[in-house]
Image 1 (cartoon, rainbow, N blue to C red):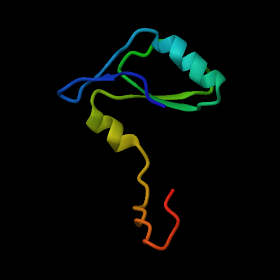
Image 2 (image 1 turned 45 degrees about the vertical axis):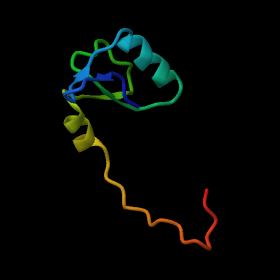
Image 3 (image 1 turned 120 degrees about the horizontal axis):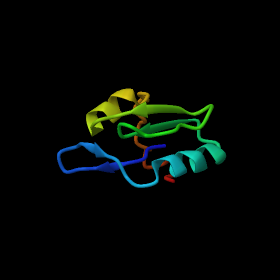
Length: 77
């Protein structure tokens, strides 16, 4: 999950209630979060990665294989 606001220049800004949001996300089963710098107290068992801008966020996300577009005869969902 990710918490923050992305500015026009790509910077990730802090939003209100980061600690509360992290706690609720952890309660719901999330184990990882991307947050702006200085997130405050982090729930035990949750991995938090601080990012300064959208480039940082994209660099830490896992890469996935490209999926092929469905052919015309395949079911499109």
